[in-house]
Length: 168
Image (cartoon, rainbow, N blue to C red):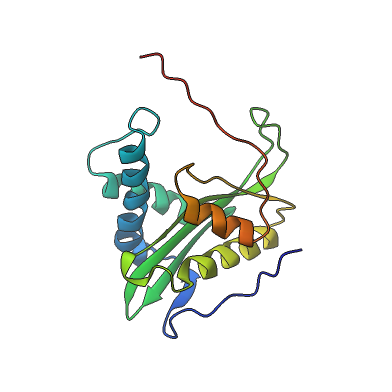
């Protein structure tokens, strides 16, 4: 099994469960994910106005769901990282039994390449496994090679590739 020990992060970064007070900062990072995906492929990834508010509403619901994990990285009182995952049930569309799904990871530009994303990812895997996940699935955008390297370093192996065909 791959070593999930964290690497060094900026010494003052705290990885913790998100709270309602963190929603504005976390939603700002979540909106970055939505923007990146939509800008990369607007036909595949939807867009909506006030994406920060929409993401905050979604995260607020997930904060109270027992099988969801919302983590933040905090540095000097600011939210500089977000990770979101959940335990998902059997899914016939992708032929997987109950599993942990690592949905989102975003780190503020100011602290990228300092180990914050890895620290969040390691903690997400730990939390999902603590909730009983025997496997954790992570999806990465094809163009996001940094995310693909990170999940590979953490022991994730590719199992499926999504293909999209647009009719128009």
